[in-house]
Image (cartoon, rainbow over all chains, first blue to last red; front, top):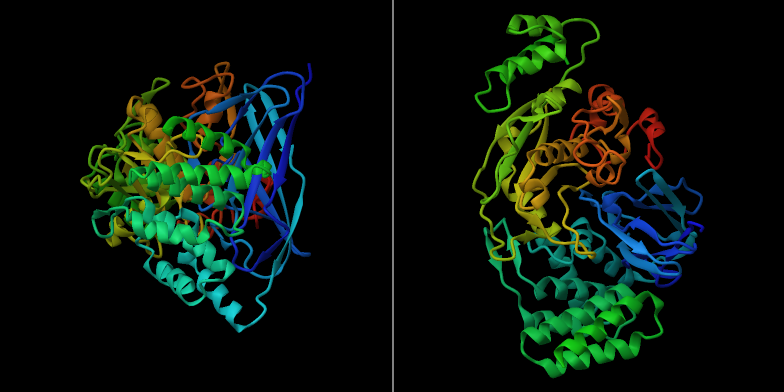
Length: 283
Length: 276
């Protein structure tokens, strides 16, 4: 019996525009011959999984998430050959925008956890991404409209009515440059925000979800090349909105389209299973 | 900090009409027998090598929650938030502020990071802002956080790691709601993050044959240890944690003084990944 766990790190692509939100996808695989119990809280805020990022020839730095959390023990048992996946928004954290200028970045991750004296320290493969500078004045303006602190927080949280300056800039981005790549992410965040209620302590009341406005934003991103995480969240949110509106046919159609267009994406295998479960439930 | 400032800070703590203040904590800290007088304390503060830092700790609570327990009996000793920090070199001036923040969540009773961000901005009391000689920390007791992607609910959080400006404890969590030890420990743990302490600053020690974990260890680490919860709890800051709180450069400790993780080379040597 051999205990062996591997950690794989993926990204959506190798080239990103400056200001484009980068997601790190992590897969923990049981490559040994016995079942293993692992702490499965893979968001860096729990500090079992960390990301390290190195720009060009600069010193490697730890990605510091925007929040740090404590929780009770939560584990998963992985049978031999099985794996779990998680995604992390590494584009914005405690130090602001991670990829704040154009250049070549190397990213690796490290999983470190101990259960009953069994210490797992597993390093992932390193990946390299190129962050490309804006090509013209228009793209420079698009970058400046998305790369503010409030915009970063809004994209990270996928909401936050109190971040009024950030929302205003993102709205300007989608209004002025509706066909731009960065506008797709702005539409995503604006749509996700409006899809649910927001408990606004600055106003002392709840702002209710606005299904129609949310759909307008999300429908603009649905067919765009925005990466696996954003794609699945867009489709699942639209499905929820259709179901809440009792438009079950549209919900089914949305899920069918997601399954059809994502079946070749290994990062979305769990999401496809989830989509199939929902389809089965609402049929 | 000057002697005058120390004296003034101690006087304020002792005269503080709020809970948590117990002269026996101070006596224990200085190794004195009870009762202890203000004169004794100031005399002790003036001794060479005594380093004291002071901080406001503003605590707010949401409707349907409670303030952290005044004191908790554990391992045959009474513990308070003030004790824990005093023993590590920080005199906490605890101010229980708002006790009725509206619970806007309604039936679902959980909050997102964005909503907590708006809460902190709206309810932090400027009266307790930091001064030249006094730090300022913030804790809000909230019902529950939204579940993460795996369906887990956190016990506590520090938000805005850039500035380390606020913490929350989620008292609606059954683990905290039913166990005052967990409530007090989680509050101390989260405030520790605000003073730039990390999980890896936590250490272990042996007490009567039981492996104990100091405050900055994650709850899950204690639960997953051989000694388990609650036997594995060490309700104390360890040597590294105390050294950071009492001796590291003030900007690397003070909430708002710099990013989470940024500290000196000694701190870096305690664990990997600290950016100096």
